[in-house]
Amino acid sequence: MAKKKRKKQEDLPEGMSRRQAKMAARAKEREALQKDPRPFGGLAAEAELIALQEFVPSASAKFQVKGEDVTVATVLPGAAAAMVRESGERLVALQVGAHSQNPGRDLAYALSWVLEAKPGETLQSTAADGSQPELKALIDATFTPEITVYNDFNWWFAEGEDVPAQLRQAMNQANGAVWPSAEVSAGVPGAVWWVNPGGGKAHIRWIRTEDNESQVLNALARIAATGELVLGEGTKFAGAFRTHGVVVPVWDLDPEVAPESYAEALKALDAKLEAELGNDAQLTAAERKQLDNIKSRQVTI
Image (tube, rainbow, N blue to C red; front, top):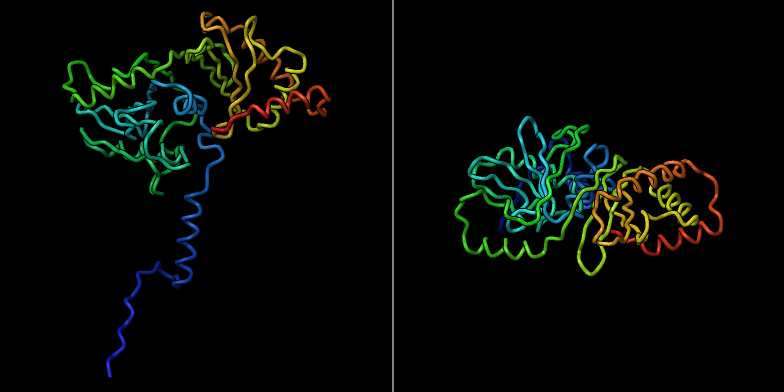
């Protein structure tokens, strides 16, 4: 009579039964799939990171990561997640080809990788694998970077660097898709970005980082009901994006008007918003109508 084959001994975590180990593994999988409601929350650079990931085509900012300089950029060649140049310069991208639905964890993973990578190495997927530390453990939560905006992607390669023809062609194609963009320095909360995609309209996108989205939307509705939700003559409130747990109001503009000319209007509107954010009174019928209008045009990205 043939002997029964013994089951292969399983390598279980210490003190766990097979059932407990399976349950723990499933819990870990669920956690990995769960989306962070506020991936860059708690960072002074939250609005800047959101801008680099969602709204600016070609730009970069310098961060100190565990005492090392790292350039966090919008896009890298081949939509790579991170790379180390032959010179030793470390770069990490926020707009990448392969990622998870948790951009904060992905950024932490890429930052951790680039600190250990060698010159010439490239990381293609930024999808976090659970090995990365908290983002706040890597970058100073109180630091706000200065963003450098480019009109093209020529900064991808150092001057005089021998670039393969295929990469040069990819860069030239990418250059044709860069929209003119500028950060508007108005001394207001969050980050304000002007962009001109063509088609006769430019836009201002104001990344607000309040904790309560409903309060922001209610404040916008109250101001809209008074007819004052504008940034001056020839401007029109277009709606709002919702991204990474924050609200981003958008205005249509005359593309011929300089971006910095909106600074004073933004300050004046910010004062109205700040006043309304603390207003807990019920919305009037006119204000509810404006809120419904804003929500109907809100786009989640």
